[in-house]
Image (cartoon, rainbow, N blue to C red; front, side, top):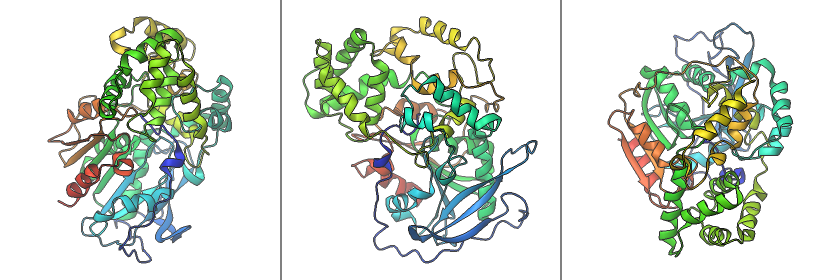
Length: 465
């Protein structure tokens, strides 16, 4: 997505807890008195120091499997909080990416990145349903895709995952996660939450704000997925590649045109989906895309060996356990949320392939350059959902409804291919008085990964106003 592309090991790298910040043994605030403590969401239970990070308190919140109540069953979601329950600005809920990435294991890392605001906010993180220690398990899909959402899995892996999840797969949409967050809000005793989302977390934050506008204080949206959802054909990321590679090339003094070389390479070898997948992984390692222009130039000249070696090297570290990024949850969520050339996952499976083929024929070079139509219609996250079983899907919010009129910071990097800043500007058009910060030289996840501190400082200033 538009999701977590790149190596999970880099995202989960250990970071020391905030220097100079004392986080006493925390106690979670009592739930709102308007909430019945005997129903799902009525409190956080089992509170104890978090395993491996005892400066935080962990517990669980109970939510219904089916928020409509028609299908019985509950889920336990793991929650972590800092100790300052009386923080003057209330609770800051940090939402991670994916879909499929947990929150609780990242508590220490995120606390270190937003340390300057923790005197005013209590930090809250949780594991979205189907992630973390309670991750949905689809071993074949996990093996095929690892930490990528563009790699193309085997059809058998898709079928095995859908069978393993069964009809309950439909209860892992973003709409279900939004319902969970509102129960978490009540369990925390909050009237309003401040939400800070990264990547897919921005989409969750936006959809929560649209569904529960009275319960949002302010929003930080970092590496933005617009509220209308991700484009399964990546028709923003495809042309954005030319801009990103040329910007990186200019910054590093390379003397070729990587966009023209990429277009020539894709025409010759038909490997556009592989290249896009590698680039959106490599941005986590090197936002300057060092060595890529040279490899593309050689490939365009008939020597693809260096480019293929680059692709192979990037994906050596792609393996990820479901507890770090659940590909089962990733598939269930995207297939429930997405709108595709064939419609939604409520469209009969027969006929989806034909609809995709017609779309491939209709795509223009302008829409896909420097890639081609086969790239746009050959991405893993799209093909998973082409073969996903038919299921009822939640309705979409009205397309042109704006976010509630609360302070919103939109943060992006000019080297980001996972969520190009063109998406940020799409969301800005549906935001009242947006504050926009684009960080030069930064790629995906500005708050946690950018070398330039300007993005983090913008977040601190925005949250502490």
